[in-house]
Length: 317
Image (cartoon, rainbow, N blue to C red; front, side):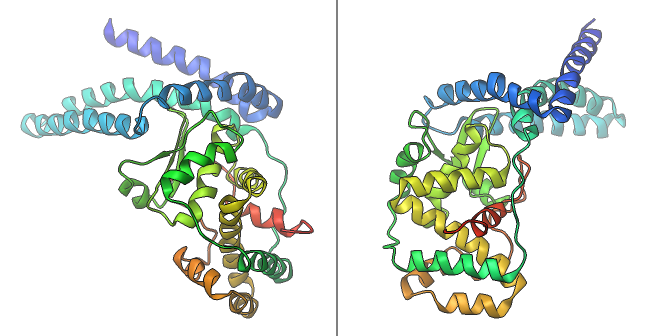
């Protein structure tokens, strides 16, 4: 009876989710409706709940799930070797599926609508001229900026207000080693509604990263669209948030320019004054020919570098 109940439950869950997933995938209006009426309110509710916890709930949940999965797996593997039978491993797989399936279903309910909601087409210039112009504009602005940034804790406290979401919070990862292992400096976790950042990342990029993750909480899944939304918010906030956004855009634009025209990249690099040059080195600008933020762990669609195309098509950066 237990096995049949699990099968029926899994079948019922799949039968309910499949039409929902197909509707989101093939109907942008439905995806937008699901985002507004279900996904975004649910993620904000989860955020309010986990915001009461002073540490990242996603990290604790991940640790508990990993422990609950790996210890039984090791025991099942030992029994399988001793008995020379795959039955213990098969039982472990069934038990793991009973936990994984509801989590996957919840992830689909929460995160598929914002992923499926089609963003506007974003220009992506590949020619050296608009890239060189954009880099020059950003360098001119940053050469005159103080480029002095607050402590990480102060930045994270101010980030929700800068993002236009003052009731929200951004949390620093308690164990940022896992973020560095998968090459991310920030991550939004739909299942807990948490915006997490690595506070040990370059402080100059932390304001923009924090606002970017909050844009995901606001329902913007596409990475390029989230960068554009974060840019607009940071520029409106001014101060270190505007400087951080310009630094992020400059690192990305310089990477694209270097791939397109090395001579133009060098001319732009030579325009940087000592203060900007030092910060640019601290954010690994010289060693980042690819779009920054491209990571091994991706939960969202889109191109991080779409911000460059957006800015290069505007009259002023």
